[in-house]
Image (spheres, one colour):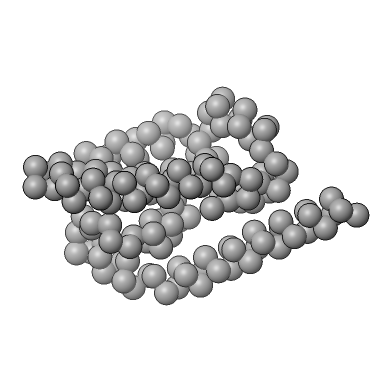
Amino acid sequence: GLFGFSGYSASKFAVRGMAESLQMEVAPYDVCVCVAFPPDVDTPGEAAARGAMPKITQQISGTAGFWPAETVAKAILSGAEAGTHHIWMGVDGFMLAQLTSGFAPVSSLLEAVLQVLTMSIFRLVGLFYLQMFNSTVKSAVKEKSS
């Protein structure tokens, strides 16, 4: 989840859960359901959305930077063509895909091994990020109330 985006975050969790369930339903027909974990994409829509975000959300989400739309589109298309369930971009996307793998299908033995081997370390990194984000929120709330 992300501060200021409770509804948006909930819808993303729902999409991931639906994709995992749907993948089970369509697997017998050799259909692959993909879930993309795109970073913030440099588009006019994103620029408008960023302007409407609370300052705290801008500070937190600004840590990952913006990716060119063409780069993101190519990565998603490439992943979909390869039948990859979790499509990610960059180090943060890779970490997020590993941490949220749950009962998601894997595309290869290598992907499964990477998930098993990286889960603990990525959880530690995730806790660091969470501490940073929570500290940002607390500081902003404290500053606002002063």
